[in-house]
Length: 268
Image (cartoon, rainbow, N blue to C red; front, side, top):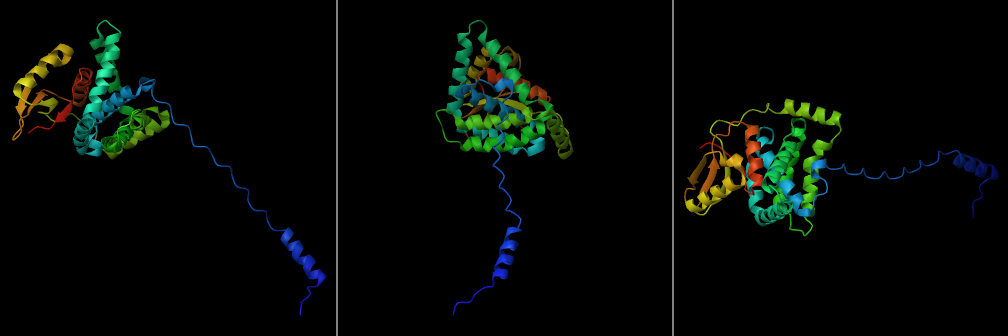
């Protein structure tokens, strides 16, 4: 038997429904913030130049970030050099060809620009964020799959450069936090060296040194140290007398302009 609902009850039910709060309107999705522009020194690069700038940033990190993120970063940087050796050689050849085409003392011009690039990454106001980013970027760079446009390098450079493009207030706050969280930057311990490569024989290492002297008067004025690798047919080419972090960065900028690897080497 069908049950009949009184008219009054029906009207009361409809009135109650009409007083319910309307469902909140969905907020429109906010667009993702546009990526911050790169620092001027990194703008208008082709893919191979971008790779070289990543290399420079990671080199500075290997020289200056051990106190904040640990000594493994230098080892990771060395692994990066091995994993991307062919690409880095291609990048340097393309870069030096661009400078050579400009004529004049192109090697000096390249050296000057590499020094500016290394000094950019060594800027003290952004070191906390830069070191943290480098510790992650270097591992991703090692594992990156080769790509014709080197997309991985563009992403890596953006992450390395982000601390230098942050608003001044944020950069200053991050720098203060970095000083509080890590020991103050000190000098590289006495006896440290800079390694410029490992070669298949003493003669090959000596030829490399002659090449370095012809490309970089700054490095050529130093004293080389040739060290055999125990158990391997290799000879390390090193430079002694690195007294502090700034000196190491300066020497490695010159090595970069000459197309040589540059690694900090702990004292034996």
